[in-house]
Image (cartoon, rainbow, N blue to C red; front, side, top):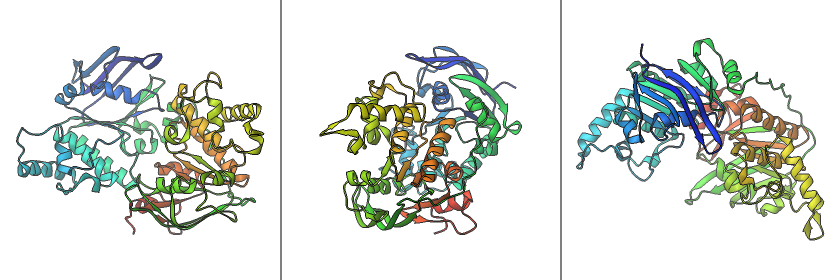
Length: 500
């Protein structure tokens, strides 16, 4: 049978980086086909070539056996190709119906009645329900993802590309999304899913293609694989097993939050009465869909957002109303969500960035000045911890890849007497090996007396690496019931307020 989509010898270079090299793969009608690989493997580049957003340097894209050379995405859309990127294109200030039609209005004059009828027909086909007059900012992450899919159907796409579609979804919402994709496939659509979540691939996809370093590794039937074997294809060797970690309670200060309230950017209560105890030795995961208050809580704990009321203690030391410098002195360390905005100064050297936040420590000073030798020693320690790849310590940190910048930022947070580790997406941009190494280092720091609070939008990551997981929804912490502490679906329901 002729494939619906076929790539032949696709190559693409960006400057000195060979993003894709002689990649060939095929996808058939009615298939949910996963495209797997580490960050930088070429997955999204390949899909953007299919979507017409990028033109290949060499090779062909064939649809139904016919070569197609799209000059732009508009041509791809006319050919029935639709793509949902990892970052939603929903505009929050306009209605769901206006978002659905945007860029594909049915004429110069739009009949709201007829448009709503067609929107409702498409939604009912998928089993979705929408208030078409409501503003899009009322949608949950799961609702926004569903609206993105309906936008493709509104444009009559028959080839659907979804880039990390479950990144912001709870397990229940992820399963529901894949059920919708399965219905589309059964109706004759061709679905390509770019993802790193091997568990979901095994549970929901028909075939998988793995890329590594821009080259094809394998294409296989998912029934012939499991999550472990897919991970091995992705990284090129078996993933090391983490040893079980009995939680000890070494001496250390720990951290206690009591009835903490924090305002959001719009003046709303983004964090509402959070109370949490982190014992020395504990790695605690904080699960929740994006925008549930995690960001504001972390900003408040490091002192860049005001705590309206409530207490934060590290050991016996009250910190709720103290400046960030005092919190650093108490041993609070941050792996920030956005390393560019919150973690590094891009024009500064690796050596200078490795010292950020630690420059006031006594061993870093020589009178009123920073000691050059101490700064160099700290930088060497930081870059060595996770094998950060770099040219010279004097190079600007902007010269490093995103993954290497993340390694440096994570290693800096774990250096020099960390007592409370606040890690927001600590594995962002890292390969599977580096992810394990970062979490292993966090656990080792906790074994030595620190405690850690970790935010990740990947619940499976938290369940794998943390001692316990609590959920946050609409600024309120909610812990799973006894017996459900490791139940991903029970925690997932807490993440979306389903059991409130």
